Image (cartoon, rainbow, N blue to C red; front, side):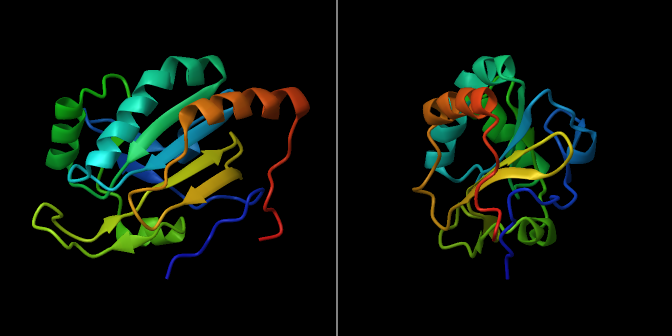
Length: 173
């Protein structure tokens, strides 16, 4: 059963291989402001494609705001590579092989396949904003492919968070 993470508290460990052979390690991620971790359902998901294309398009504006981004799925390496290439995700870092255990530690919902294109149980969408010290700033969880953050809203929010030193909310669990 997933456990919801609480803003302001330490996040679990997260280390996954990236398309291209490197590794993403949250412990080694030291952005100026926040690390954006976008969990997506996998190559089989057309809504993920649109969402990650949109994220890829705002990467320069996120970087201007001190945000590093990575998108991660439970897909194995070959499917993640195909998604990155076929979807034209450019510089967006794509992590793969997220384990069910790690997904659950982060509170991510998992689903059983219902179509042949869904190769195994997979993670449902989730978005995490993590401070450089490893504490959670914000999180959103989905149980379907339909509910996703709008990046334009987050760009505006990032500016407000910095300008007002806005604290994490939901910190009472």
